[in-house]
Length: 530
Image 1 (tube, rainbow, N blue to C red):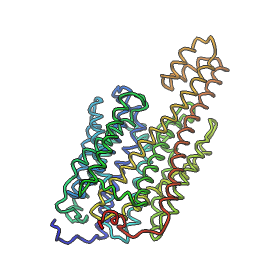
Image 2: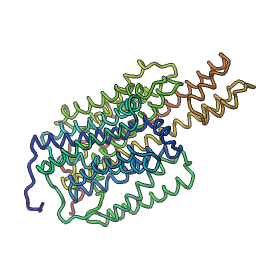
Image 3: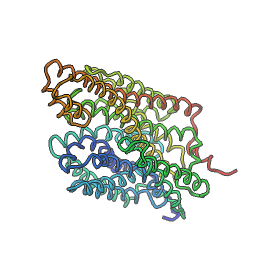
Image 4: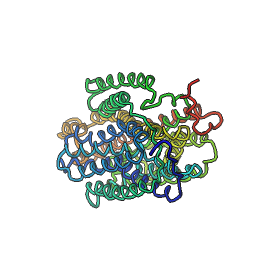
């Protein structure tokens, strides 16, 4: 399309088609982000994975997504949003097929990496594709629905994973990927032929290759270090060297952005307080979401806690999932004409309060005591997922919409990565401290003492339970009670971390969103000379 050709006017039928294809893809990307965590034991058993290989089943997906999402989003601005979106569907499908037919760790990890790259293309362009295809007066409701589906897909992942693992096979998840992606691909081809998505490519623009290289060297090593720091040691060379590389790359990225007339990431937009809040808020929402799901699933499935199956653990999170969807769908419709200041403040407060209440969960708690706390957290998350992207995107010109969508999505992925890491560190520290006390309390002179001490540190839950059953009634009951207390304390530590993160978000919202509502495209003023 030439620069003089008129841009098509968005229509209701076009918006519906684009909404369908983007929400289908968000379902696939979302539940592949969280469902795999539920089926890790099944994958490990069938493919005989080592602990390091098992860790990278999750890590390589988020590392690839975080590394490439901004680059592919920017490429959408330059080469065409629909082209990058279709590329994302194809690459994600190839990755799902590789995982589906994998018989060893190599094919599994290659597939997960491809899924991460495809997910980056889809997540990074879907919002900007949808925005371009939607009339301005309908964007609040439509983007709210997109945000609701994106948030819901992340939250129902454990339910989907648990259901497939329990009733079919863990591979069924990736079969479902292929079916859904095929449907989205057909709709996308139709939308492209009918030109439902206006072409807002920048004539003559080129990808900032130096910035892209700097971004890969920044995000790739940083993601690797954050994902493997706990297992490799935070002071080991395997962790410190990637952190040094990423720090140097950050300096390089800033220098290239300042010297380029068309940088990969326009850093000057970060002078706008509300754009900063959109990115920081999504980071905190991702932090809280993954911090909750990873450790809630571990907690409720532990024999020392609720002892739920994978399926029942997924269903236990249903109140949070329902609250996310309802809040995401309702909030934009009710709040579209108003400032997002107080709604976002309320959302951060809800996440903080709900997480703090969960951090007081005792070893004797029942599900009836915690489900309503999940509703509070879900309401806050749902409002964040629907309002924060809109908050940031309305400040940018259409030609930089892909860049803005990529940046906001990258914040979400990094928040999720860091939430898992920091929550894991808090849980690990609590567990190590508690285990030393539990081991010290083991019956002196017991034949099982050495075996129990080893199993508590290195063994599986079933091994621990078997050894406890061999103790005398009094010792077994006391040890089981101590382990329940330890499991609850570890979960409480992770939830306290989530509460602190959300509290930081609350303070940022109070500070950054003060003042009158700025006009559309307001961030452009920071890039204008004179």
